[in-house]
Length: 334
Image (tube, rainbow, N blue to C red; front, side, top):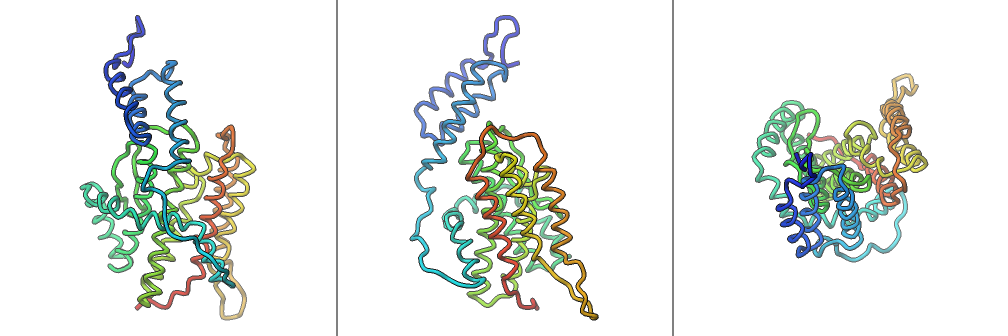
């Protein structure tokens, strides 16, 4: 029990006082984690719980507006214009250049994740299975991209002060992270959910750059395949990242996001038969599946009170940027 049923005295009163004192002296990001720890010791129906939940949301929003030192991506802005598919591709990536620079600057976090035994053991188990299916080179590239995607979630959760388990790989399903604390707003859920595909986009960009720099068809294939995986992860159903992104959107914005997501699958692939007739493209088939999923996402009744403009732009931007990898020329991989 968290409080005495007779007098209402808080069971963890002393620990709550200690956490409150520490939070008052801590930096905003550390204070947020301490307040989240404290709220878990309060009865959910108490006034203290309601007030602290509001405080946590205020601090969380403040950190988003004024991020801690060292988290702002640097570098000069991209200038100039470009034409054609390459120009569109570069402009889309420019929108996410902050996340790409951030990914380069988080080497310590990426290495730290590899020290977790759960992550390493399940990673090697998945690698062994994918190795038999795709060959060792593509399996290694895919596993690393999945790992970067999951560490994007870890980074977002750390910024939000939320405790979670280390990434655990599940063969055939990617990887998962189990939350040990709850979100207090749809905005926080969206930030966590869309962080994975954003870092996944950064992994595809790095793989594509390596492929162009070293003339490696394998790296280009990894970049394109990883982009498809992250795009599918934006499906607004179940516990996929797209569903978390939809939590912060009202119905009109969900319709816009749905149209962007469905359109992203249409140009995926076209097959021609010897008689010159077109079969139904793979992308069209997947677009029908995506459309059905989006109808579910739009009709859900968990709309927030106010829409989140950052979430809608991030979602649509991810759909566009990840779709751009369809036009990456991938030579045959020997």
